[in-house]
Length: 111
Length: 113
Image 1 (cartoon, helix red, strand yellow):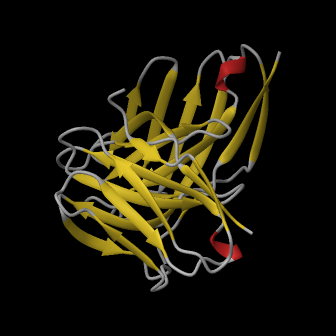
Image 2 (cartoon, chains in turn yellow, green):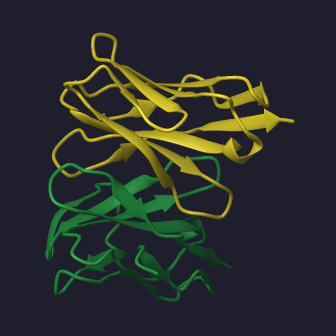
């Protein structure tokens, strides 16, 4: 079936280091991908998105990389801060309008 | 607040009772989603509306679940004859035209006792 999966369920980094969160997707028809951040007790918060006609997109302290050949997505967070501690999800659209989420990676930032 | 609004934020109900949740999307957003999330898992797709039309419903969704969006604005999700396994966070999200980001509400946490 359709699925989006994450390689690492937990990631612990030192404050100031860069973080990389990975995601594998299975549906080659997906042409739009989103990263969300979810803090405890809150709904997912949009971070950054990328379309399949792009390999890389940068935001403020975040970069998303898309490798369609191996169906892999990554989120890079520069100079990770304690406020970045949360669960991160990638989501894909296997067909127009629908969004499918993966399991999530918990990012823990040590001061 | 111009974000996605969900009501109630918390609901405790006895097994067998019916519950209804409401979602008010961002104004003029034509896409509306319902998701269910349990601890440690990603949001699980339940259903999707484009304006008032329910375009897709998860095959995992039992007949006890029904969603409506009668005027293409707010939406309701009803669960009939609740079971303990229905305990979860129910999330609503809305999005604008085309394939763009979807914005989530804070969710309704349901506990079935």
